[in-house]
Image (cartoon, rainbow, N blue to C red; front, side, top):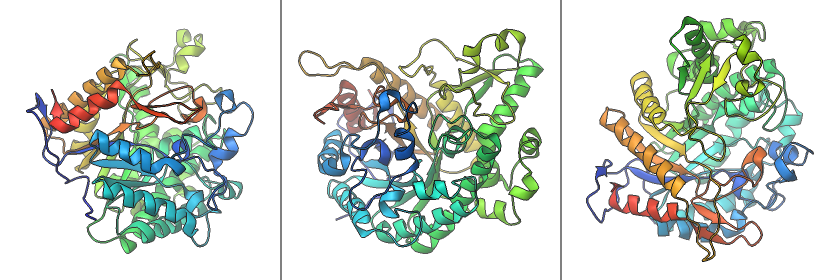
Length: 485
């Protein structure tokens, strides 16, 4: 069994591509545990915050839950064969914290680790390099009941869990991601309440953000102690590509505020030495930063990492508050982050959001690939780290045809535009090492339940039958060529 690093693994091409990607570029797909695994009460697993949230009436469309999801827990070998058929060189998946450490404390459950051992071994047998994400939003419910991410202790529990997972799998998994989209965990989970655990307190959202940052730093330290020296550590951020609607001072100020609480709340302490003063000033009426951030916290958060992941779907266009905007409730919700009377932008609740254009996906998210290239070039300039596109994809109204096929030309167009944007960023000097398409499989799409399909493989939720869509076959050809035709 040979372990390959997804940032250096090679692949062969069958024809000279029109747009070629660098040798060793990682071609992948991504998933998340709660969205695909199912087996919610098997193998010692206990409820996560998403189990509790999904079972709360009115929180998830149609009352859908991830109890079964797409049954990946029992069908992972079939799913890995699908990945191999597509020619994927890498697969990014997340570990279920409550499957490994059911209460968020104490020793690991070996049955939970055994599932991931088997998954990783199967990936390696098929020549697919695993990328493990430690946290994709499934906090053990026991820890939420003890206070969740707004309390400091949760950060230490996360580091303990990271060490357990790495101790069991570190000899086979070459790349580890600490957090996936901590912005969503903090501000959708504790601010607007549209994600688990469904709390709506702006102060708690900011406290959660700091403790997620701290948990990341503590986990980096724990991973370094356990993993082999060759292992690489990353974090995946959904950095908002923020653009002012106009070049007026008011709109530029709106963009500054959203960029602060959307992006720099993570990148400041992770890469620049600490939280920016303007962010703290914007939110000083909500939290006491001097009390929240203890001596040594920012140094802990800033532990060096090896790779930086970007999750990108669309740009964020904002303007200053106005009477016209205030009269339009719809305008304020054009941030793409769900419908709630509570804001996910603490300290900047009155900033107005606008669609970048009217070419939108089934999620209502505008399609603008230029934001991906702009983001990657900016991240390369600002942070100087090797980059991975750890999520990028789109939901459309996929239909199974009379012949059983699923033709999704809109998704093919979307992915092609965004791969071109990645190529443009590389040509501009950005060190982009890989692309992970979201998502491999149709799955449980959080508060939207099973109503939105992001997969390149269609799943019949009644039978669990998998059917590769046109986009899957197209992506396979891109991988075989090593670029766009």
